[in-house]
Image 1: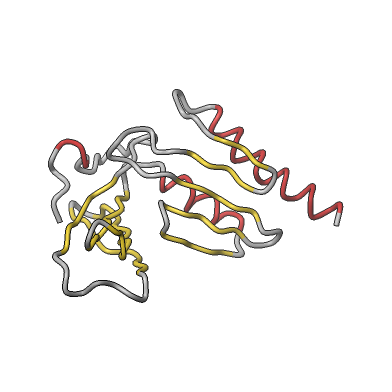
Image 2: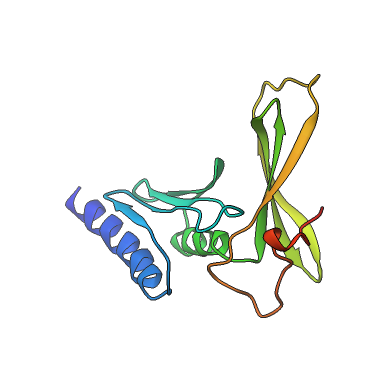
Length: 151
């Protein structure tokens, strides 16, 4: 048990150490998680939860689980970058689908998707694009706030 707690602390300490090196990044630290709130209206919150040997990364409410520490850290920091965006699909004002898209070779490509089981299918659909930019890529992806994030 003590070893597990130390491992959690070390892993999340590594995450927060990197966050501390990033200018202007705010985050909240709890014993088993780190939360980076959306830094701007067109962004989304990114969370990582340490379960002791596995990690859950959340982009808004889209959930990714892994047992690999490197993959968990990379997925967490990818969510803070401009290389991905999150497309929220809503009906009647309620989000029912979260689509993660990655900017690859000049195009947005669907990487993952999750959805609620029940949706009011008879209602009109609205799509909202969210994108963080706390980590910028040299091959800059179109920014959701610039109006170039259609798709």
